[in-house]
Image (tube, rainbow, N blue to C red; front, side):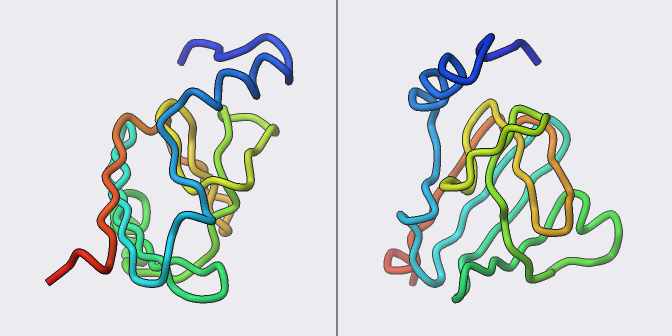
Length: 115
């Protein structure tokens, strides 16, 4: 993965331009499908900042679906953007300390649009 910025200010400026899913933009029942370099994750927004997650590592460990928090997104290091769920080019960090590979694609399915 190429470096997105050389310092915190550059990193913040770069992340503003990425396709991202803000936590505040999700409502109960909304789905996100996040495709990383290695896996696909299906994420459903629950109440109280909790998410039902399946796919990827959770499937491989026999833990799908599981309910946990999503801390935010990182570049793979210790800088974390806590106000987003997913952003293309960044890694998701789950409440169980799992950090994904970089996200390549995000699909949002609003609960109100489901049949």
